[in-house]
Image 1 (spheres, rainbow, N blue to C red):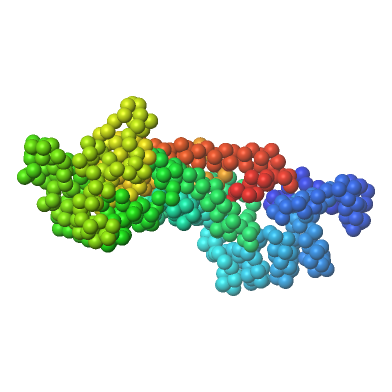
Image 2 (cartoon, rainbow, N blue to C red; image 1 turned 60 degrees about the horizontal axis):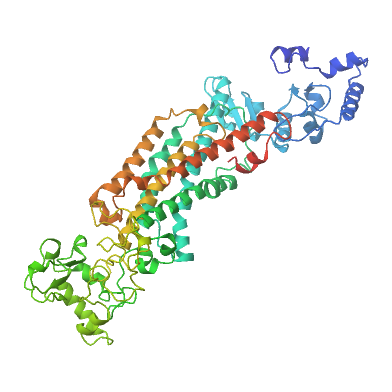
Length: 597
């Protein structure tokens, strides 16, 4: 009768064979103990694996179901209770409050997550001892409600399932948001490691790191909280609360050592592509932080009492003092050669009308070339030169360093080929020897090395392109700003893929879809903010960003695609393995064991 009732309420499957049925089939009659012993002996011959997974119950014997009444449970040891859990279908009937707690403790000792429902006073110990105690809101007593963790207001058991699903969804989305946020830490910290190890200029400034963390990443990270549940969320076994924490080693490994590495490579690649396009090869850039303003990337101000060894022509005077001058404009720094028709009594017009230019004049009568002496730039240069004991006056300095009588002046501004390699056929786009204002020789474009002292190593690809600020060709500091902005843009681009792959932990994006409207808003907002930081001129001085060319958005795009393909392949292999070994001890494969966060 007990078994019939259990079958009627679907506690035991209709086709399951119980010990009573086994005893009757094998001729033991009502001798259930003998039948039980015979069933266990038959099981031993089958050599069944009894405990291969803490969350998977394997049949203890050929008997699939068992009902244990309270009077029998009373005499059972804790180990015997645990053995009883190995049955596929198990019912404990007419148990006391102490016995209910005994059942709960046995299941917990086996590693199960135990939920108990109850409405009476005698259910209180089990409700309190369970991992999740669910009391009835309508029929339940006050004592049971006090002991429970959750109260079903409508006494509807389906609310338990909905509650578990919602809890799993919240936990899933928190993990996804953390994985997305952590991955950008690697491309942010790697520039500092490279600076320490190789003295490479920072490929991403500290200000731009804050722009990522407090700007572009904010809305996308929040949008993952609105992601819908994955279709397999209720098919997963309960998580092990002692192992599967919110942040695990596998999650950190996924964010840092997998996705983070792809992002860092994309950032460095974009940085070096931009520096290369403006005349600075990768081998030249590595180790050149000192001549590009150090970690700050600001035009350096060193050796204020002499000509700086890092600044071959000019330099020396504190660049900070130079920049503080009331007439200083970064866009007007440079040198200019005046037209011979102006003679020796007028300053150059146009760009040369600013006193902060070093002006080259030509005597209309003799054709001799000389530096104009009545400009502020000349005065500043003279002050620095005369403080250095190596040069008694400007004449000796110009003889040694800046031979203005040479036809190559304005192109090479020095006699020393070690500083400025002459233009050769290998350095020009068309293979011809060119000496123009856009040659790598024509450098450093200004008094005091305002753009750093990194010597160009190849021809610039975009000499005639117009920017909001100075053209970055051969100007180390300007090229660095453009490269840093490109590295910042690269993080945004690879974070596009990172956000999409974080939508799911095991399912394909194809099955999950892109129905999260908040995420679409997040993708749009981070892209628009990135454009604003790069292309609004008023932000350039404060954030050190620049209006980079559109083709400098593209170097990191292959890395974004690679991140997406890598993660989709990883998830596909996990799903394929689980489907092939479902219900077996090998269901969790190597890839899932070490990469599923």
